Image (cartoon, rainbow, N blue to C red):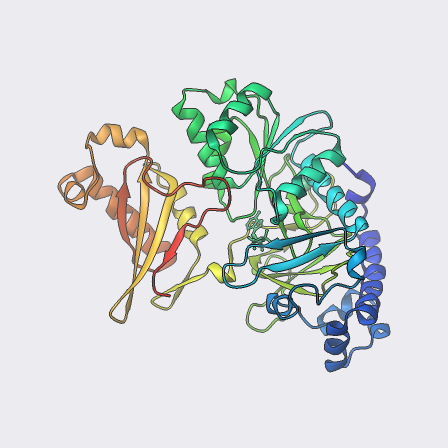
Length: 444
Ligand code: ADP
Ligand code: K
Ligand code: ZN
């Protein structure tokens, strides 16, 4: 562990630390951020009335739109000169979401990523091949700072240029890699193409995040790169990657570094706090951020929390995998569908790979969803067809049966009908470095 004392703090102590910090941050934003002063005045909360976690539900939520409305620096709590770094998240429409860090925020950021890397199996002296994008995106510089704090050797390779990445991994022999799970798939596939076996690779651990992924991808990456991969979670509004990380021992949920980020899970419709184990929207209050502290930030990410003790010894609460982002949810003929649900179904079908794309169209007034999914190389070889056109699939009983099986499983587990299209190996979209969009919604 990077900070063993803090990471194993008994829960009662952790709680009183959180309560003290919560009182401080509420007073701090009331004093320094006009937006929060107005918001708190509106709901009639005076900072002194917040005694502890019990009063948390009295605080208003902060939404992404609040950040946009105060673009670029309107939510900063310190003078611009005290901001040591600025990052921004891509934002699919319009202006990006801008965030700022003081010197101390950057120190905490690096410490949280160092905790995360250590939880993932990394040790001082190991080499990190950091294939997260560098730039305004928090991934690259975030992992970089954490690896330096932990005492690793960092290779700041950034995303893309897969040929070069493959060469550097073989020549430099890093023990740890960090990138998006979809890019780890791309790299695994690239090594396979070149006939480089997982045993021949120096990699032992992979720290994967920035987009939802499932056990199907974990299996593929672990086998393909010969690693034990863990999930890293975070978002720029809260600090960046390193808000939470799975421990490599258990890989059963990601420990949230709760002394700095106070999590809640709330009902997506009513905002009411939900009990442990129930799925809802993840909400964070930053407890120590100086430049841009946020109260009850609505992440839009869906998951659940558990404070069940973990065998790794860390006491910090664990979050489940992100089941989807409220923005990513598809409504197909009135049914809510998350891409991760589709991926979970594919995991149970041995003849396919977790390479897929969901295309949604509107035909007249009806939504039509198509799932394009790749068959495995083994299966493709056994079938012996050259292409997998609709006619070929119709005529070949094994292909036809597979297509029916997938469609039935999707219908039975998710409750929507999808037209299934089988793709030959290599035909579904791949990550070329960053996050991969697996959904094409042509209705918008
Ligand atoms: P951008 O908005 O540019 O993608 P961010 O890095 O701030 O930049 O994105 C944060 C979001 O990415 C999170 O709110 C979440 O939806 C997603 N995300 C990050 N890490 C994970 C993860 N480990 N699993 C699932 N989703 C993740
Ligand atoms: K390996
Ligand atoms: Zn653990």
